[in-house]
Length: 131
Image (cartoon, rainbow, N blue to C red; front, side):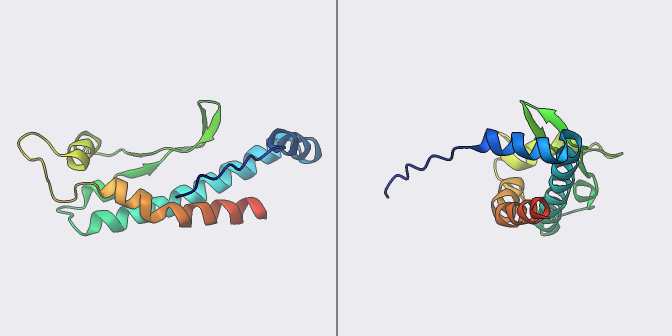
């Protein structure tokens, strides 16, 4: 497989020009809206992945999308588990397994959802930012 030596230049200039034309707040609102739409697409993919092995459906019901935030110098939306059942505690165990149960039902569900939803996520982000 050949390596691709592609270099993209001018991103900082493009962002600066967009902020100059439309304002920093307007650009951030547009990016935030796109991130939320993209996160909703990923959430649906996660829910679809969890349906195949759900027991009570609590893990699926507790999937939550955070508000957009700055994280590591980039605008980010986090998907996490929050709710009455405390499913956030077992998501990691279910995703990776344990010593006693190395291959639980649904092992790797989050990773599969991430791979399956990547193209749809990028498409939604591009559509939202293209408007």
